[in-house]
Length: 172
Ligand code: SF4
Image 1 (spheres, rainbow, N blue to C red):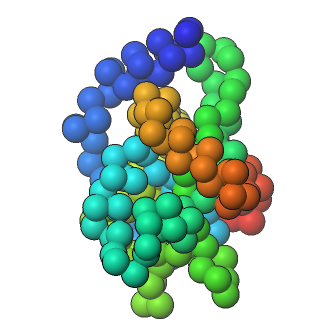
Image 2: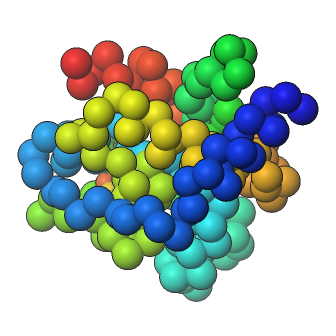
């Protein structure tokens, strides 16, 4: 409960609507599209499903299986307690490690609805700025039962992403 209160306060303190998305697509930022796609918050799943769930997918489950993966999630510290919040991230292309949504021209095919971790953070932020953005996104996940259900579904199908810690090593 203490954790939830800590994250909720953080969420209220930083009004989500006042945050601006990043539009940077420099080489340094684009590396993340090839190594560590950003995580989604609950609204991202709704937006992506509403705009990209085409009839080629028989069911919404088959769409999720194609485009999303369950990640062990980020390790964060709130009120001096360290813990993990599972996240949902884009899947990868079949023939490379590139994000499923990365186009051949290096652009994001879902730019308008790109995941929280992609649109709200970029590689030019300080560690502190990045941590705040991340915690605001993670607080939204904690409030969503539906998000956890989708994560459990992907996990049960073994549709799993490597952890952010593992992936970050490839960037450094
Ligand atoms: S969703 Fe878009 S911005 Fe995010 S990693 Fe994939 S291609 Fe890049």
